[in-house]
Length: 141
View 1 (cartoon, rainbow, N blue to C red):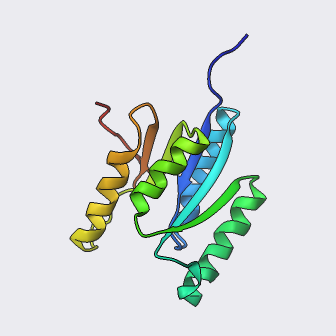
View 2: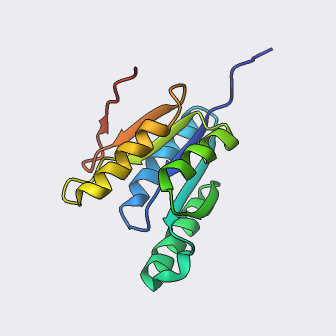
C-alpha cells in the first residue's frame, strides 16, 4: 500500500495575463506527478468586484484553468499571505507555484511576497517561476 501523499499543486495567480504561464507550469507538474491542480487568486480587501479589469482577467484565468481540469478558488482577505497559508493547510497542498518577486513594484509589494514565502509551511515545496520561464531555486531551511 502506498502511503505517500498525493501531489496537490497550488498555483498562486494575480489578475494578470502573465499568470497563464504559472498555470501552464503547475499543470505540467501536476500531470507529471498524477496530482491535483488548484489555482488560487486572493483579492486584497472585501470584494473582487472593485475593478472591471480584475474581473475580466480573472474570468480568462478561470476559463483557462477549468479547461485544464483545475479546481479554481477565488478568495478575498485583507491579509493575503495569511489567507494563502490557511488555504494551503486546509487543502493539504504539497507544492506551491508562484511568480518571482516583483522587481519594479513598491517595497510594500515585495514585503507581501516575502511574507507569503515565509508563511508557507516548510514541508510544502515551493517553485518560484522567473519571468523568463526558468525555475528559480528556493533555499530549503
